[in-house]
Length: 162
Image 1 (cartoon, rainbow, N blue to C red):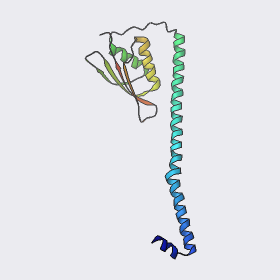
Image 2 (image 1 turned 45 degrees about the vertical axis):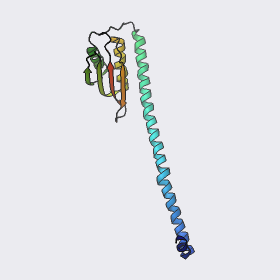
Image 3 (image 1 turned 90 degrees about the vertical axis):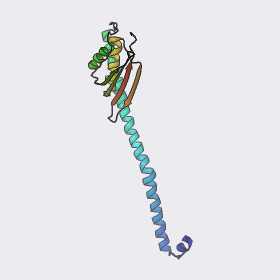
Image 4 (image 1 turned 120 degrees about the vertical axis):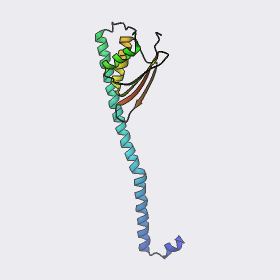
């Protein structure tokens, strides 16, 4: 059927139909293959750049923290807190971390949730807990949020003194 229709066309009509089909194929290849690949590459480059910026910020903070520790001499001996909840809250306040939820359990452990926290704040908080109170989390869950650079954190602290 198609072959008989093709035979009825003039040479000029065949040329125009061939050109239209070729143009349609080229257009489809461009919009369905080449253009999405270009967009994917651009998005990948933006993601890489954002991750690199965040890594450099964390590295800079770590270097500042090490320099501060060297200046202080790290001579202070951390004291185990009498109240784990107070120690965690005080360290969070010093580090600029806002605790969104705090849940003590019957076994003496404490679970903390913090929203909209930046990596440097988290590291400062954990460093403060470690150095000032000799406390560290027994379980850590960190999630990225939709806001670049913000994290959602859940930390569980076990009270080893009880």
